[in-house]
Length: 364
Ligand SMILES: NC(=O)C1=CN([C@@H]2O[C@H](COP(=O)(O)OP(=O)(O)OC[C@H]3O[C@@H](n4cnc5c(N)ncnc54)[C@H](O)[C@@H]3O)[C@@H](O)[C@H]2O)C=CC1
Ligand SMILES: CC(C)CC(=O)C(=O)O
Ligand SMILES: [Mg+2]
Image 1 (cartoon, helix red, strand yellow):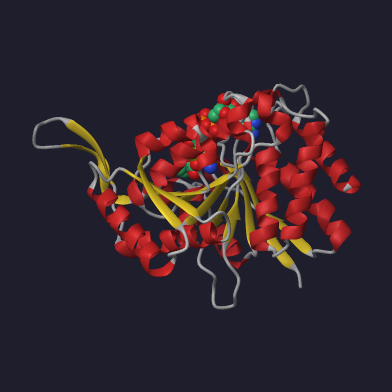
Image 2 (cartoon, rainbow, N blue to C red; image 1 turned 90 degrees about the horizontal axis):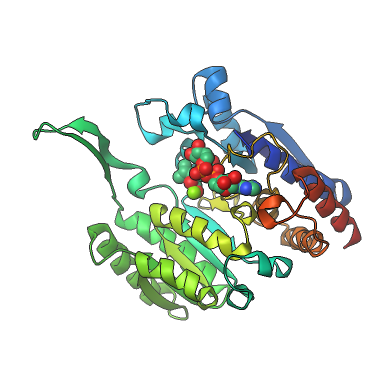
């Protein structure tokens, strides 16, 4: 049966890296008969310039119908400085996709490749063997909470404010996703919050603890405050297996963790919803990085975060973890051969790295 993959390249380096990921998927499609039908649409600033919206209703419909969405990045100085009003979903195509597809579980694996150990800003002996996954809640929290705004209040001063709001069911569903993942790995879950100063953190900690005691007694659960967690990830990242945290903390901790791998350009992600009645699970696959306006259009973007996101798409969207393993091996081979972009200390461009991965796929 045909599998529909909607490619939304977006802005800046987004289309450069999704083209690389698509080329890898097309190679596997030719060799393994995956029957993928690729569709393309605008998103982000590019879509705003063309339609006045960051994503159109038609693209939302196609995203909901697709087996998987492959996303690049959105945003850039031209659009970030617009004075927009309305809910976050009206100001960002990505945010609307995450919210309307209910992609609440964002998996962000952190696993350095051996060839890049000496390129991490941390010591090789600290990063060797690191293998953990940040499970970031993606549909709620301070990025969505109401009220929010910039208003002049009764003190006569302008106030900018946001609301961190988590309902108990929202915490329960991300806790289940994280515990289930930890159970399939090394059975260790670290929940990260700020329960010493935030009410939402108190409910978060209480709820995660209850879900663990009732449903996952075989998983060891620890709690860390986010400030300590940020330090622990740098001090001894090998101590972690699965980390579950809220939308804001997960966003920040994952960019920081990227340097374990040598570059933000290396990190992939999968944003997953609950399985539907027909058994399919909505999913959006994207590198963790943004649109990198400083290098956009130069052919220098590291495509490996996007290519490794395509590997996550193969696992979670197309049910082919075996092919995902091949992609990861091929990335390792390309890096072993020293083919990498300048962010990893190399001299290759996006297209050379992509070609090296595709060539390695043919040799595995
Ligand atoms: N998921 C998304 O679509 C995201 C979008 N953004 C948007 O992207 C724009 C730029 O945001 P920044 O804060 O600068 O974050 P960024 O992630 O775009 O870039 C941060 C730094 O990392 C480098 N970098 C990122 N990806 C790279 C890659 N694949 N290869 C080599 N170097 C790479 C950039 O050159 C830059 O120096 C903003 O408009 C922001 O809102 C930011 C984060 C995520
Ligand atoms: C819309 C933003 C929250 C994007 C971002 O920084 C991310 O998802 O990592
Ligand atoms: Mg981010």
